[in-house]
Amino acid sequence: MPQAMVFPYGPAAISAVLKSVPSDFRVVEELGFEPTGQGEHLFLWIEKTAMSTHELIDQAAVDFKVEAKHISYSGLKDKQAITRQWISLHLPGQQAQFKIPQIDRYRVLNYGWHNRKLRPGTHKFNCFEVLLREVPEIPDATLQQLRLIDKQGIANYFGAQRFGRNQDNVAQALKQLSRRKLGRNRKGLYISALRSYLFNKILSERISRGYWQQPLQGDVFMLKGSHSIFSQDLDSDLLLRFRSLDISSTANLYGSGQCELSALPLEIEDQVFSSYENITRSLDQQRAKRQMRALRVTVEDFSYLHDEAEKTLLLKLRLPAGSYMTTLLDHFVETTSD
Image (cartoon, rainbow, N blue to C red):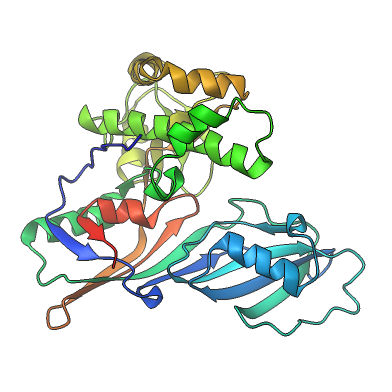
């Protein structure tokens, strides 16, 4: 079920080659805190090249002689890239005699003990350095899109990787979620794909109607830098906070639980949900729990440099955990991979 999504700054005016080599796509995970130095969970700060997070976990299980189920991560990182990320290993009783083993496939840059394991979404930011190739020029339309991304942020779509290499996770989820023998990870992947698909549809509809950079009566708002949400009637103070990007409107990740939206925001969501009753029915059967996600996200420390001679465009930026670099790229460029 491929998605056709509407982007707020118009269609892309350029094309580029993405991830020609792993060093073209660099990601550094910012945890946002330091391990306490105590506890039975070993945090490892790892650099890997051309290696997925799941491949890293499988290899670390061998290297550290621990079952993969006792290894946790905060974020899934791209395979065709050079990435630095944290993982945690549950190693009770091993702190006193622990030594880093000989490792070939990745580098351990730092480590520390902590009293809790990592959980998905624990980290605060991802820092990116992305080199786009085959970009001979930057037209005015693209420059304007880049300025708007810097000033107003991006639509917080779930990226294409959420829907699988062949973009068929939604179709597979509808076929397979009724089976009882799905593994926990596979089941979670499919539920996430279904909810993400519906969220993207809601966000695209809001942009199409002109309600992405405009708060609506009945919205639920999320505070920048947190998952705190609140409802409030529109007034001058709230509008000022919205325009300064301190808060953003949200939409539901479908599931059971009380819906706090009302008026037009609720009407838009209900229309989307009723159009995909096969998806909502499947999620109801899986007892998915309702959550909220911001409709936009700010881009921190954003810079871009075009090298006309090399035909490259270098992007540097920070995005909060849960947002996608590929989504940012979709706001101004059509990418292909070598």
